Length: 160
Image: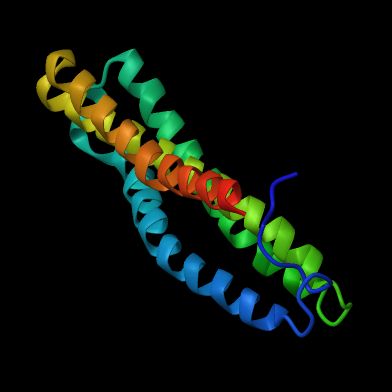
């Protein structure tokens, strides 16, 4: 199991409310972007040129739509759980679950955004431009969102 930072039993007086506030603030940053992308994807089939998509482009579109929806489910789930479990002294467990759903949510955001860029680039320019653009974008998501923090985490753990 991954270390998600200090736990209340490891750090006396650790403020779970502060951790919850940080999580909520992070979600406030992620939610508008994925909601706007989801809205765009919802209206796309009703555009005149949508009929011009190839079968492959339709599959990519559908995967982008589903990934955006899953990202929203994952990012909103801590709110629903928090309301259902309210005042049941379960905030620490909720934070562990919310951390995992937030990370999973970012994976689906990255997948949806990458698929959306693939779709639009392929529609406009064809495979010769689509492949390098999509590879660079996917690498940027992987590198900045996951590899850099994991490398730093590993370096910090090696030092201690």
